[in-house]
Every structure is written in structure tokens, then in C-alpha cells.
Image (cartoon, rainbow, N blue to C red; front, side):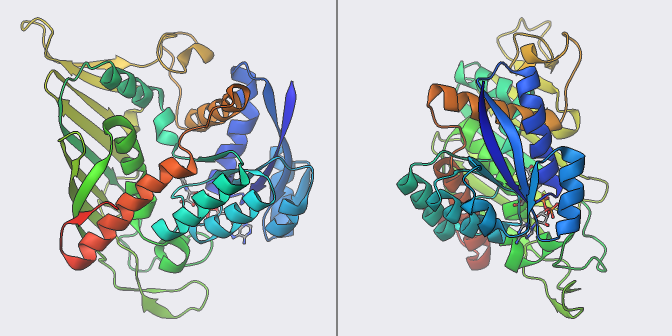
Length: 377
Ligand SMILES: NC(=O)c1ccc[n+]([C@@H]2O[C@H](COP(=O)([O-])OP(=O)(O)OC[C@H]3O[C@@H](n4cnc5c(N)ncnc54)[C@H](O)[C@@H]3O)[C@@H](O)[C@H]2O)c1
């Protein structure tokens, strides 16, 4: 068994999911490398200590630069708001650390390019946490598409719907609401939610050539948590775009935080010549499949309960028929990252893979701003 010493930066939502992944992966997967929870870094020492104690981290840092100076850290995990991804990732690469960075890779493509160059120049392993690829039902969709079961693809459709910012009194900026502040987030639903849909789409259906988008900011001004002043909202509250994929299919994507009744409804559907696939995050262990090759008298949508040992990742969990959930996507990503160290292969999505999503996000925002079609460059 080889230890891999983890330095986690940020102990919020993602800090917790990743920590759970580090703890669970070696218990359920046969791995040569075992993560060691070496240090957690956050600015508030008291809160960081409480997190370290609860989660089992050996030590605490309050300045991420100090964490990067430590010889006993092998891999740095960037779980901070988006505006810190670039600076921390590049510094970590220059310090010779492996870098695991949360999505979106960066605030924009230009930053993403710098980050790719830094990790590649330093020759350090890198990965971005687009975790939905590791939902077993989504991984199974990839397998069915790669086996050619859908035939020629015509349509790719994805939505990511939430409703938590409808109230105009929700502030922007600060600990819980940095996502509404363009300075911290870069963009709104495009970088936060559509980035997930785009990453999955690129993985399942290949490259996106060009986009035509519309965005809207429904609440124009919000109080900023840090200043107490009402300031213009510069993020996109909602975004819809259509696009051409390189394989000739059409894409249709929508995301909003104003879809009353929806908390995190990520759905995708793919229609091909011989079949279709449908997946829904609220029912994440199921993959719906329509196979036109079935006998016509029994032809229809089937709902596959992805829980059997010959389905992706499931041999490592319970017995057939018993499902797993959201947190397991991060366990799978940790396991795949650790296995990539054994095989000396890159762990996807790498920074370079995630840069493609960033390019699509930039084209989407540019298209909406200029009310015109934009090539993905
Ligand atoms: N993969 C996913 O499904 C997914 C889901 C949610 C968030 N994210 C991404 O994860 C990142 C973090 O999001 P979150 O929801 O965990 O946010 P969060 O607000 O819950 O946590 C952010 C953490 O960063 C810390 N932080 C901020 N500035 C810091 C600094 N200078 N030094 C050290 N720590 C600092 C905060 O203290 C906090 O612990 C974002 O990039 C977000 O886009 C990804």
C-alpha cells in the first residue's frame, strides 16, 4: 500500500464530498494508493480545526500558500470558489503537487489555458471534478453509445434546473452566495450548472462546433454580503443555447435558478437512429433506454435499474437490486484517479479535457452578449 497525502483547500460542500470520497474509495475499491487526509486549509482556523476533527484530517493550515510549501503534501485538492482555481492550481503545479481542481476549471478560457500550460509544464497529474461522468447510469449510457446501439445521433438535450434565487432578497457575494457574484463565480448558471451538462455532452456525444445562446438576469440588483450595498448583478440567472455537434447532431441546453419547484433537476436525453437514452439526476440510478431493434409488439422505453455487478462500478458496492447515490460519484472519481496512478494514465477529465467545456461556456456567453452564433474556439 502506498500513501497519497492530500491537502484539501476549502471545507464547504465540495470539501465534504471529496473527503468522503478519499475515505470510502480504498474501502470499496482494490487500490494500491491510499489517500491520507494530511491537511485541510481554510481561512478561519477554528472552523478548519472543527472540520479536521470531524473528518479526520491530521493538521490545519489557514494560508493555502503554506500548504503548498509543505513536503508532506502530494496532491492539492482545490475546493474553493472559482476565482481562486487558477492561482492555487498554478502555484500547486509549480510546487510539484498533483492538482485536483473543482469545476468549472477557471473563470474563463484564457485562465484555463494558463492552468493547462502550468500543469503540463510541471508534468504533474491533474483532474477536474466533473463527477456526473461517474454516475453508473451515465457511465452505462457512454458504454451503450460507444457500442453503437443508438446508431447515428440526431439530438442531444440537457437541462439543469434550480429555483433557489427567485427571492430578490437573496444577497450576492460572501460565504453562502458567492455564486451570485461575478467576481467570485465568473458567470452564473453557465459556468455553475451548464458546465456539468456540457462536460457530460462532450464525453457522450463529442465536440461542439458552434452555439447560439440567450441569457437573462431576472433580478438586476442585489445587496452584496460584504459591503451591505445594493449593486448590479452581473451573472446570468438563466441560459439557453442550441448548438451543432461535430457528429452532425443538434444540441439543446437550458439552465436556470428560476424554475420554481426544481432543486437540482439535471436531465439529459439522446436520440439516435436506432434508439434513445434518457437520464434524470433525481432518479440517478436509473437509465431509460428505447431500442428500436426490439420486436415491435414489445418495443417501448425500458427503465434500467443500474445496480448489477456487470454494470459500471456496481460490482464494488452492495448486492444486485440495491442502489447507490450522489456521494458515490466522488468515491468513483477518487478511485479512478488512484487507479490512474497505478496505470500511469491520465485521469479524465484532465485540465485539458475541461478546457473544452470552458471554451463552450465562453462561446455561449459571447453569443448571448452579441446576439449571434459563435464558433467554439
Ligand atoms: N462537482 C460538483 O458537482 C460541484 C458542486 C458544487 C460546487 N462545485 C464547485 O466547487 C467549488 C466550491 O464550491 P462549494 O459549493 O464547495 O462552495 P462552498 O462555499 O460550500 O465552499 C467553498 C470553500 O472555500 C473556502 N475558501 C474560500 N476562499 C478561501 C481561501 N482564500 N483560502 C482557503 N479556503 C477558501 C471557504 O471557506 C469554503 O470552505 C466551486 O468551484 C464550485 O463551482 C462543484
